[in-house]
Image 1 (cartoon, rainbow, N blue to C red):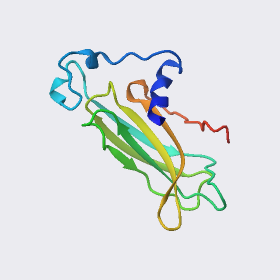
Image 2: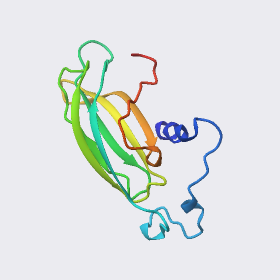
Image 3: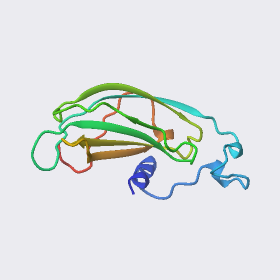
Length: 151
């Protein structure tokens, strides 16, 4: 559901989204890289700068970290990056971590950001997420807002 919501951000959350042209070819096989015709691989470099006002459920202060992953074609899945945990800093954590992803089929790839809180046992607890089509991302700085309405 989270990936579907991210995909429909591409058209303002209205109407239909056409399949990428590559998927409409008779020879296309989503599991075979060799069937990708006229698709240029892409290298995406991201810097996770920071966050603000990350509130965890219950009591205490969040110890957040961010996971970034590529979801899409079978051969692009599994690309994942995790930032360092900022212990007891849910108010204004700063990471400035940089990661790079090589994406073979950017036409169907989505980039997913998941913010989690690491508890005292080292287990992750979900704080929030956002997903975007890789082809929709442009160079520059972006602020990903919470959809819950909480500040």
